[in-house]
Image (cartoon, rainbow, N blue to C red; front, side, top):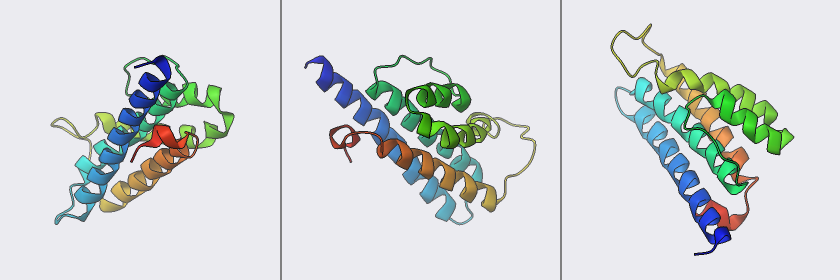
Length: 138
């Protein structure tokens, strides 16, 4: 496998995981009662993996961090048109940890989950729109 094939394959793998997380968000918000906490975590994961797919495509190394502000800034340095959505996506960072452990500060409402789902979807779509078809896969 040459470098371009490896890069394409790796980008597709990141993006496929992002899309899989978006599906989980949808399922978790549709069950009764909705699992809003779970959906928030997967919304963060979808955005993070999509942004990392973009960096992978552009062969930009990234740290294994969950802070979308850091990852989003790296993406915006490559494509300035990602600045706005990357900045907004940073609010999803809190969902990487906020509800994952006992003692959460509050019980999230369905609307918060729906808002996070829309934002994560927007991030994934923004990235997909900036990648060539062979790197998108699904």
